[in-house]
Image (cartoon, rainbow over all chains, first blue to last red; front, side, top):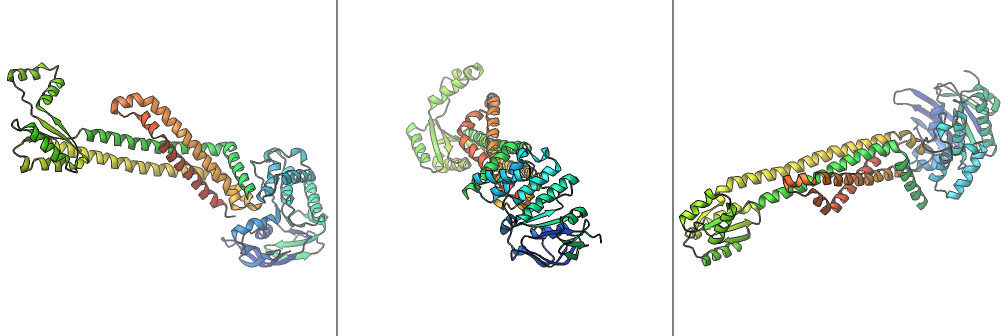
Amino acid sequence: MISYRNVTKIYPDQSVALRNVSFDVKKGEFVSVVGKSGAGKTTLLKLLLAEERPTEGEVLFDEILVHQLHPSQLPELRRNIGMVFQDYKLLNSKTAYENVAYVMEVMGLEEDTIVRDVGEVLEIVGLGERAHHYPFQLSGGEKQRVAIARALIHRPSCIVADEPTGNLDPYHTRDIIRLLQKINELGTTVILATHNKEIVNRIGRRVLTLVEGQLVRDEEHGKFIVV
Amino acid sequence: MLISFKRILRSGFEKFSHDRSSTGAALVVMTVVLFAISSLAILQGMSAFLVERLQEGVDVSAYFRDSVSEEEIFKVRQQLLDLEEVKEVEYISKEEALRRFIETYRDKDAILAPLDALGRNPMLAHLNLKARNPAEYAQIADFLAGEAFASAIASIDFHDRAPVIERLFLITSGIRAGVVAISIALSAVAVLVAFNTIRLTIYNSKEEIEIMRLVGASSWFIRGPFLVQGALVGVAASALALLLLFVLSLVVRAQFQSFTEFDIFSFLISQFFTLLLLCLAVGIGLGVFSSAIAARRYLRV
């Protein structure tokens, strides 16, 4: 489903974010990408969303070379990938409901479908009561649950979460990880970038370890190993 | 397609009404710009009015000798009317000239007394000419000064006023050129200020635009509401600028009229649709153009 082939990313200031990284992700997998801050985890995910272009190598999503897509084709790619960010990236001028509904609006779905699905998804993430609150009225955990609801509302085939628990306390962290596991059990591929050892060890699924931009370990039932 | 269009419109209206800080800033600047541009249009109208009034005061008068009969004068008049350059010719008989003189100086005995003493009408019958184009007065005067009329015409009044007339043309064409130049310069400054204000308000939405892009919104779905907001700012600013202009014109109407004879309020009424179209075209055009350019910059995610 997803392929990184000999991917190298060097930023204009000559800092090397990724070095010759190659791996595949199959449909329905739960993959944790671990490594210290600056190891290249975020760059790895940005390449998948075509937010960045690789200096060398290629990234494929459903057999499509994402960096050869025309800018007008990027929305289509991004609608197939639900993205969860560490800083939530919610639209501050919209309520929780409107933030989630926005993704369905951009897809041109009917109002009835939006009302039904957004209500359901907000219930699933436990925010039924907070639907009409603005982001500034929500706690960190609630904002992240809105972000997850937004990522899965349009049933993408893959959810990519970049440090989704980075700003959360342990209680909310458990909540969010449980939610991601549940989404994965329903068949959605999940890629989780984190530097939280406890989370990775508890999930006990495939782990990719990045060190200074290089993929040093790829284990089917891996653990977070400090390198 | 239609559903997306409706959502873009709705979102644009929401941005316009909810996003008070950015809408407010753009609205104030745009209103000032449109007010300035409309004022310049009025200034143009006023200068045209004043120039016309000044030009109306310019003429050429040909005074005929006492020996020339009215019939001969009418022949000359017809010859003049046959000239393309001549717009109208007014015949003033000796009697009419005297009547007008007495009427003008009826309260000034010192001027009228010598007339009684003279015991006859010293006025000369004459023709007052108006040219189609003010620049053609000299040509008409030369025509009258020609040998054909030397025996009939005693004097031509144009030569005495020629330098004044020439200077007047220099001044009026200078005023027009100046007003046009100032209009263009001020409009350019105003447009740049409005453009940058709108760009700054969109800069505040930079993060929002990037998020929209990352969750799969198309460029038009993101840009559309900003364009609608820009257009609405243009419409609202046009209404505000014209309202301000009408209120101010009512306040200064009397003073203006007594000073220049220019009725600013009537001028505004007569030019209302032109001004409205000008404001709407500049306002909506500027709003949409600035929004499009500014939003485009942040759509490259």
